[in-house]
Image (cartoon, rainbow, N blue to C red; front, side, top):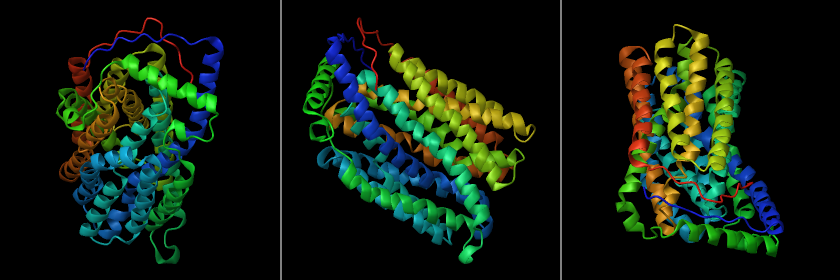
Length: 448
């Protein structure tokens, strides 16, 4: 994937301090808000994994029906992600992200009225359609604000919100399901969808007045800060050299499809852990929904720490290839071991699940450094969305296969072993297709 040699000269001391101050202001302005949206998105996407603990029995759904419904989300995601990201490039992040957030919240609330497999499939598909473009859209949006050497840390901070969502979502769903079950004649799982969907609807409205599309439009930056950031971004673009800007050419680029193959393997593991993590914990011997929620919360807290630390270390070292591949291999080994431990050892199963989540999640933010080496502009909008949407078809296949194998073998072990093989393949593909990158002669350590 094209080797890039860069020389980044440190600016004068005062200018550097002003630039770092500008990026700190940008980070404090954008990241907490975007992370909050990602937390809401993640909770509304994966709360089905907790609702499943009651929902299947109430609606008489099989494991296969659940697996297909959990995964069909990604078909809608796949179909609409590239158009959504191209629309973001055209009309801006503020309006695009507001639309996405409002609609996925409304769809989450509608899930409480599901009674049939068909209705379940339709709403999960629509949730994917409505949410499509948020994740790659934010990745693209952040490239408008940060130069390359600051992005892995920023991506890690943003994506760690999915871990925070796991920390919050597990206990929250467990408490709702146990505390509100039967209130107003609604089951606990129905209350989960209602209570967790409303905040997203409100957040979509807030996005319209809070978010800023580009640094040049940021009234909360001083004129000096705007000029410094714009100059730094121009410096970064020049240092990267020629990159593909044409949309169709980027979609034909073999490197884009190599990225898709790598991310597909990582998403396979991430989706399996997301949608079947609570079921794995229950199969290990923990039956109370609130207890399961707290166990998943602890695992995702560790996963978030891993994402931030790995992204920070990647930025400092200037290396992204092994910072993506090595955690993926650790995650694969833990998933493989987990298949042997459930339900033999409840304690060790939880440890293995936690290590699997840490390894898998830590690989994700650093991965997104790779496409930025060779894509820019509209090509980046289309390429990043294509990588994420096609790779996330694994999000359909993995839960569907896990549900089918769980139903027909009586255990999650076989599904876990297959998932482990896919994630291990990510490292093989990285070593095969992503060349090492020479460190910059005078690389400045950036403070986001």
